[in-house]
Length: 372
Image (cartoon, rainbow, N blue to C red; front, side):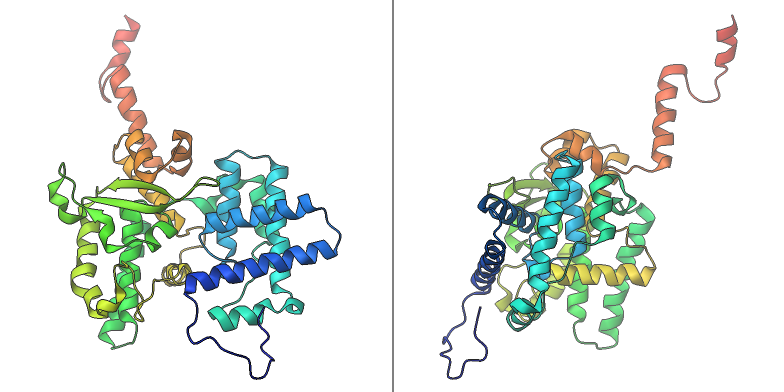
């Protein structure tokens, strides 16, 4: 850790790249935590296992510890129970590792809150609480907090995000382009069924044409380069075919009319900041929360609810489940089924269609035949 009290300290002429700086800080954190546990005379096996869990959490969340949130822990533990079907005791162990690591980071005795504020403008927090670790150990994916947007909720959400950006522009407020960017990002996340990191890391060159669907133009297929990775593997890549024309129109407006106003310094990043960097996951979550609060929606709708809504709405619209599974990159069909939150109206229509096929359309006098 840097000695901020040293006088005459030599300062490098050029700061290391942000990604290198983040990795360096992470290594310092893990080494400091390891030293703390060694001082407590813990077994090497225990220490190594805990560090491995922290690295898995980082890979799942796609964020470094100083940007973690309780929601990220929710999604990680939920996936462990619902997708990987791990035992309750195993999930509790993962939560304990995260809680202990966060406790170390927020302890002023080790200086990490101040260090992170100086390096990144933020600080680590405790993401493990009684209300999330206890619930997820026992209920996991079944809780209401992991539901999908309904069609009406989704439309209201997108309309509100648009209205906030338009109002800011009309009033000449600084940062209106960021609001427009985030509103479009939300629509793209839903329109192609993306996780937060997948949409965050998109580049302008990640889109291409689909010869079988020329009506989508240059946005006929999306090549996801930062898909969720399996343990010990590189990010999983996949291609997602475009199915909603309106999402492509929204993205075209961003690419053609708004993004060019940020200048050439933004490079190929699809969602640049006004300073030329890439939009952060924290900014995405914060703006998502602001729109949700503006509408008075409860916090059982998270950013991941956009992806769940994509799966649900495709199933309700009659798309083949295998097609939907491939679109979202699920290895097993059972995972896709966990994401599906079909409405009671859809279930009613499905039942009616099945009954019509088996005993005839509603209104036919089937009772007479039955009594003959």
